[in-house]
Structures are given as C-alpha cells and as structure tokens.
Image (cartoon, rainbow, N blue to C red; front, top):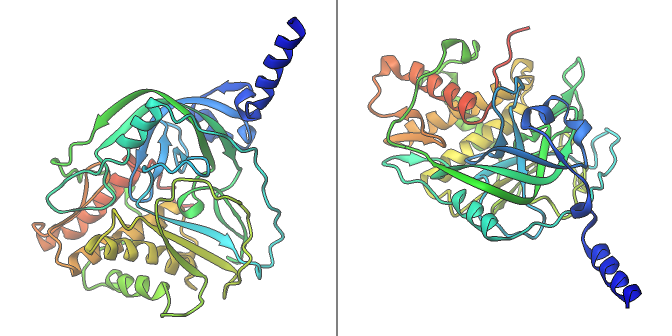
Length: 374
C-alpha cells in the first residue's frame, strides 16, 4: 500500500513541468538588469509595475540606472491573452547575413490561468478614453508579484563594428531593446493604478532632449513621414519588411536568431500591428512611427544609423507628431498621459512642447535614459 502511494506521488511530481519544480530565485528588476545574463534560464520572482502601451509590454523597475530600466514581459506560446503592445518591431537576421549564429533552445514554461491572471490580463487590455488620439493607451498600470522564466543577454539591439557594419543582434521585445525578458508563469498581489488622461503632462528636463533633434513642421523632420512610408516598400516588393496583425504578447513557437528568408541588407524587420487598437488615423501615425525606425536603421548617414535606442525612439515619435499635424488631429497623446502634439499650441512653442512631451514619455513611461554625449 505504501509502495503504491509512493509511486502515485512520484508520478504526479514527474508530470509537473520541470520549470515549475525549479527553485524560484527571489530578486529585483534592478538586480536582473545589472547582470541579466547571470539570470538566464532561471525561474525568478520579482515585484514591479507592469505596463502595456504602444510599443511596451514590460515590468518597470525604479532607479535601475540602465539605458532601458524595464524587463520585457511575454506570455508562453498558446496563452491567448489580450494584453500586450499595440505595435512592435522585431529585428532578425536573414539567412543571407554573414553573421554566424546559433538557434537558442529554452525550457518551456506553463502559465497559471487563475483568477488573478485573468484580472491582470483584463486590466492591461482595458483601453483608455480621451478626447483626441491616444496611441496604444490603456487605462491601468498594475503593480504585482511576478514569477516566470527569465531570459537574459549581455547586449541588446543591433551590434555594429567600428565601420558601422551590423555584426550582431541580441535582446528581446520591441526593437530588441530589452536585455531581459520574463516569460510569465504566475502573477499575484495585484494593485492596479488608474491613469488620469485629463492632465496632458508635457513637463521635462531640457537636458533630456537629444541635442541633434529639432521639430519644425517645414524642416527635414517633416520629410521623415515620407521616409517612413517608403520604408515599408512598394506593393509586392521584397525588401525584408514583413507586416502582420495581432497582439504580440507571446513568445514565438520556434524562436531562432536567423530567418529562412533573405533580405537586401541581411536584416529583417518584422512589424506587428494590433488592428483592433489601431484604426484610421491611429494606424497612419503608428506606421509613421515604425517606418521611421526602419528607415533610420537602414540609413546611410552614420549619425542616424548609429543613434542609441533613445535617439531612435525620439526621432520616431517626432515623426508621429508630424503625422498628427499633417492629419489635422486635435491632439496626440501617448500611454501614461503624455501629450506630444496639440493644435492649440502656438507655433513658437510647438517644437519645445513636442520635444518636451517625448522626452517625458521616454523617461517616465518607457524608462529609457538619454546617454550622455561621448
């Protein structure tokens, strides 16, 4: 009898996924971001604030002193959750890129779809209401305790040599800009915070605005809208840019670091838009933003192609503001209540207010730091 009971217990334990039996490491967002590769593959438990915005689906830390002070959040493949970013751009090597890379194999994890997870997913997929266009804006952020598999890497984004040639690619999430990703297993201790979209915050520190950007409607900044549109290519053109529709909140079924497709420059740009959240003018502005990323990364001007992530995001949001102006939108608001364009702003203050709103958004919502000039 005892032998039978022991066998039943043993078999039940063996049927539990190995990731669930693994020892859970209690840590913090900042500790992970300080050395993400040392946590790679571990099951961790952290406290943080989850956000879902235009390009963001992440867990934010406080005072982490990193270029990107957040961990990308992902659901396991097949979760079918509703929360996630409104748009993402993933970078990938084509099979014709000369870099030698190896596919990454990771231990799969399963998510606990309990009451708290369902509430968490609902909160982060509840759309905010505002008078003007609010791009990818959700109604809540959620402070919680998260458990999941941590994927960590030393570098993020494109890695270039001294000549500017792309020789490596790393990272997770939008623009591959995150050095760490948490594949969620469970979430608990939910504490939602409703965002007040009536304030229209624009305050920012002057030194948080990159020195090489300007915003004047008839300046070269306005040409970025045309460049952004051209970046997607003509109908039927195979230029290495792929566009899909849906919610990019899950890890890919088979994650590889190299595609089976070719690209003119060996780089693939995989853009995903959430068509339910981006309609009409919102889709136009979103495409201007993403197209700017593609055009800038492929730019032959080294001062543009070699911009840090902060600079790439800043320029893309400038293009979005120009697009809003061209579409004669009343306002353009970003997640977290950051106003980056308003018809009511005097022309004399337009550039200052646009740049100020963008820098506030990047610093306070996206948790991105503007690196000092070398």
